[in-house]
Amino acid sequence: MGYKHFKTALNECSRREFIKRLAEGTGACAAIMTLYPMGADGQQLASGKGATVGASDLKEVMFYRRLAANRIICEICPRECEVEEGERGYCGNKENQGGRYYTLVYGKVCAAHIDPIEKKPLFHYLPGTPAFSLAAAGCNLQCKFCQNWRIAQFRPEEVNHQDLFPEQAVTLSRQNRCPTIAFTYTEPTTLYSYMFDVAKRAREAKIGTVMISNGFINERPLRELCKQITGVKIDLKSFSDKFYRDYCSGELEPVLATLRRLKEIGIWFEIVNLIIPTLNDDPGEIQDMCKWIKAELGPHVPVHFTRFHPMYQIKNLPPTPVKTLESAREAALRSGLHYPYIGNIPGHEGENTYCPSCKKLLIRRVGFAVVENTIQDGMCRYCRSPLPGVWSPEHLNL
Image (cartoon, rainbow, N blue to C red):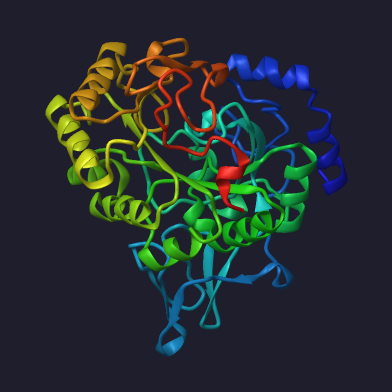
């Protein structure tokens, strides 16, 4: 698919189709471009090509340190991989060539959609607006329940891609009236250089950028990135380090550190906790997590408790019972959190936004569709209490 054809495909998404798909919860133009490495039967796709990287495609990685004997240390995420010449780091999409570290996915997009921002999910960020959503292959965790494993858990050469460089991404976002570009589906921190450049150009064009992330990122790159982006969603996968080690090949504390830094920086962020039956659904653990969020981040951070569906390497467990999600939301409210939500249960009242002061319904959602929004100038229309969030493009401070 060439760039002109790609633009045409995006522009052919009608307003009627966008609204229809929004209400269905599938995302507008969901089939515009999704290039997975494998078919449903596990066989290599017949069409398309994997990401072959030539010398002209190379972009040097931001945040790495050179060592003796052409070795390097990547400083983007807490793994801080020490990489020998000719080798790659844990995420598989960066390579040491001659003692310099290069990203292999700069401008090589393996999925591009126009999604409702609620799909990220971000509920207090420009509700009801579309986001131009991008991904490239790679992740720095290995979650056994990964929803997008076909692109996140593969190397770039195993995944079909389309060239889409920063200026093109911004142009497409503007042409399709998307006030936000979202880096999502895979782990954006592994695409750091590309995400940073897109966000910088988007900011110049008065377009916001959000990072939908696992939060496994070091302090310095996070702080630099937050100068360019306008919002963050962090997956807090559990409040147990053992869960992170056993099911994600990661650690809890670096994610908690990221959340603390986001609060200190002052950027808008929301949290998602995917609740998996028997693995991270212990009521005491959820209560402890909610208390930590209230104490460390404050009561105004939206927390989304979302339903697990069997996939990837965890297919032996059932979907999360609705009652478990409702109990988690109740625990959050008892802990003093003002905006706990329930996700992946379309039509549940836990999808809605209520004023914590007067308890009135302010935003009613069905799936990813906003069907009613009565917030006025960032305040409750009934009692005029301010509500935290990014409610209009003016609040982006671009």
